[in-house]
Length: 265
Image (cartoon, rainbow, N blue to C red; front, side, top):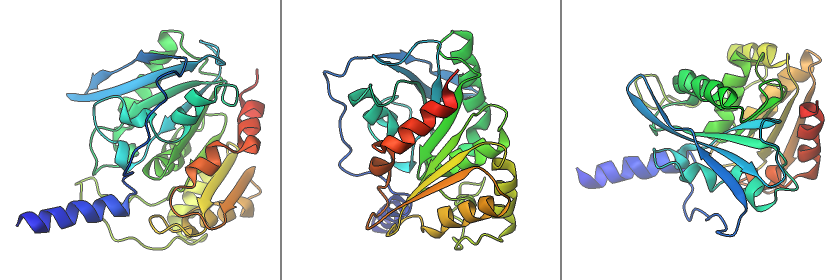
């Protein structure tokens, strides 16, 4: 029985890109990290607000949604991968306040935690940590899915959305069961629906063309559907990249400038 359970865990880890050999944040990084943890519906949520030395407290901000491998309640793992890591180590590239919640339960999707995410944004605004009129959203893998879905649900909140190696259809049911994965197509009803909603804000997709965890067809399809309705959308496909296209995304000077343009006063 134990080997079977181990096999299931390893399968889920591979399917969602659990990040082995997780990098560490440089201990000499100069950034203020504010704890915004809270309890919502009897569930504990960790959340950190990062203000690096180039960011202005009370200024423009980016909501970052992490991937499967960073789930938990320790309040630290979500800072070690993707945008938070790059923004803390290279503050001049990312002069934004980062709001970084941590999804507590592995086998859920970000939209299952929508209420908590919104409460964290409200609390950060109430504390004057960022300007809610200058907010964007991005995320990687499972957080790329969250960027698509929560971004589409709340276009009134976000000036721009940048999903990285994300997917449109949820991969885990509300009952925390794995769902059958079906390749995305630009004419799929779920893709068309997401595109229609996301067309209200600018989008930029990043995906590796050799992604073995989330098929590149996911980003291609949603971007194509957005183009079909003349939305403001960009797409970068990273040649030879597997699931980790986020390092290419968050070191992209073009993406950095794109966020600056959309979050300027």
